[in-house]
Each structure stands twice: as structure tokens, then as C-alpha cells.
Length: 114
Length: 114
Image (cartoon, rainbow over all chains, first blue to last red; front, side, top):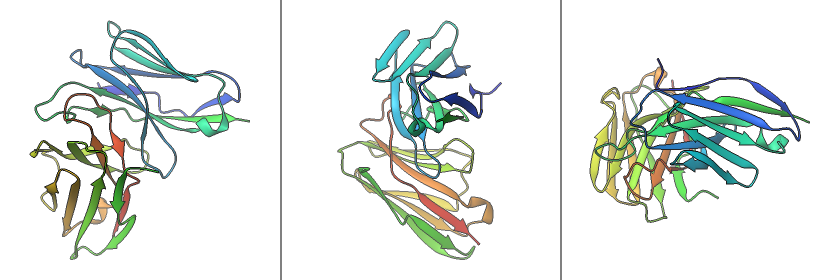
């Protein structure tokens, strides 16, 4: 079983609709959870972080965490063509140095259709 | 504009060459990282420097060697690389080495080994 699993997609969503991206993780000791956006040929950019169960909203983005189910999701409301990118889920637990235990999923490629 | 600067943006080298990738951050962060990313794959951690302490992914071959002259600079020395080492090399920094997972990536150095 992969440590962090995402549906690779592609996920196609009409412009203006809600895009829902899902991620599951296997390590129950995981403490913090992140969504990174990566445009083709570019580097990843942190868009959301969540540390406790429930929802966290930031503009059009909502991250949802359920530690009991080992599940984290990202909702994008009013999807725009500029949201077309690969979304990487990342999960962390404390390491000796710090952040060396950060594990990325394989990413979900999202395409917003005008 | 990214505050993590990587040079060069593109590098082509032969298998017998010695070259270096450079990374600089101006955010006062205390942890810096090198990641390797192949096409359609997630970033893979190579090295972490946090508070002058180095953590190594043991799967990284010795032909890659990191150097951290100070807390703002991180170099990756390359020697006798193989064509399969061709990839996007990403430098990142974080405020601390704690398990925050909040990384700031540079734009990357795209390496081609002939």
C-alpha cells in the first residue's frame, strides 16, 4: 500500500463547478497535511495546510481532514481555467531533522473545461 | 516572484563532467532541501539541512553531494552522473525543521545528462 494515495486523473471539471480532490494516507502518526499545486513545467506551490480534523477555508479553496478515516480532501469552488494543474497531497510526521518525513502523493491532474 | 532562487535554470552535462546546482533563500528560513522530480512523478527528497544538521535519503547515490555553506545557501555537487539522473531538481526551504511541511520551492534546475 502506498503511503499517500491520490487518483491520478485526469479529472475534468466544467468552469464554475466544484472540483473535489481526494487523498488517503496510511501512517496514523501523520500530524500535518498539505496541498500543493504544480503547473506543468513549474515547481510546486503550497496552497493549503491543515492540522486538525474538520474544514479549513481559504478563498475558493476548502481543505477537509478526517484523521479517523485517514482521509484529506481539497474542494475548489467556482473552478477557473487557471486552476488546471496537478495537485499534490503531502502528509508529514515529525522526523529527527524535520520534514524529512514529508511524503507526497503522485498527484491528481485537474483540467477545468471552459 | 519566488524567494528561493536556483541557478542555473537549465544544465546539460556529460557523464564525466563535474557541475554544481546552487540555491539561495532570503526568507531567514533555517531548513533547506533538495528534491528530485521526474516527469509525472512526485518530488522525491534527496537531502535536508536543518540547523546545520544533514539528513540524507539513503537511496541517493554518492555522485550527488550537498553542501551548505550557510543557512541561506545550499549547493548540490554533481559528478559522474548517469542519463537516468536527468530530472528537475528542486530546492526548497522552510521556516524551521519542524514537521510543518510548509515548503517554499524554487523554480527548479532542469538537468539533462548526455
